[in-house]
Image 1 (tube, rainbow, N blue to C red):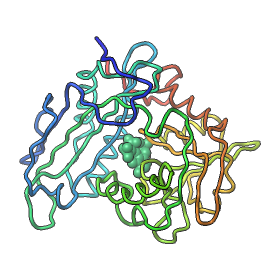
Image 2 (tube, rainbow, N blue to C red; image 1 turned 135 degrees about the vertical axis):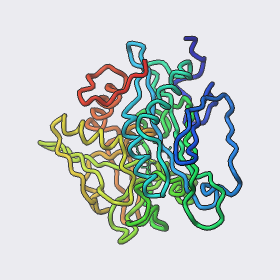
Image 3 (tube, rainbow, N blue to C red; image 1 turned 45 degrees about the vertical axis):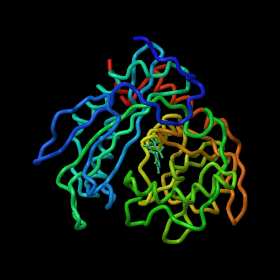
Length: 339
Ligand code: PLP
Ligand code: COI
């Protein structure tokens, strides 16, 4: 394998074309074969339900080169399950887990030369999409769907590894309604976040912290990550919001397990904004963001500062990335090797 030459430590989070992508069509009540292609475009009907009615969801997962030169994908079965959950909510047909896993593994194999070197802090990011392609005018679910996926080497979503960010509590809009689709990785949720996230970035912040849409009292998540707070003490506490309008982050789920393994208390519950002052550390977590320490959260109620990165955040980061890189034991069976 002749790896491509890229500035691995400074990739940023951008689309870089790789050799091969994959697509698969659901028609006549069944999934067709996986089609691997070097054509980076798709042709779909102008009247596809995805385009005007937003019948479209996506996923994000990463492949890592391990220290012994193998390639590991982190918890792809969880992404398959979450895509199936989203598909049920938006009345779509989702790829079965076996098809999803085959597409992921083969896509990584065929783009092996784009997998960043172990220890570079970069990864091969995989972006699966699922959307309705039937041309329909009435607001009805499609009968045909496309499942496709591209791969692109990326660095961290926010600046560089473990460099702290600043958030603003969003007080002028909400991301998602309590009984809506905030818990689905639906394309429209991200369109809905662009204005507030853009305004916060314009004001010098890295992202926003959304509040619940019913009372504007509880923390939901940022535009691209879940949130956690740490209380240090005789026994550390990992505290993360429970809300039906946020995405069930696979990274956060893993961190709750790791925190428990490390002997911390894990609290998965509603977190009121005024609890922000009770945390010693805070972080944003997700596949793209990994664990990004938060140094400051600015709200109309006050400004909250944190040690960033603090010792607990660092420990969680080391354990998570250690498992992904194959330097720490994968006791929970999270890593899926492609070769
Ligand atoms: N929250 C939102 C809104 C996201 O887009 C993401 C990214 O996928 C996450 C949280 C983190 O989820 P995961 O850890 O599964 O990537
Ligand atoms: C991810 O973390 O994989 C995501 O999909 C977040 C996205 C907004 C970049």
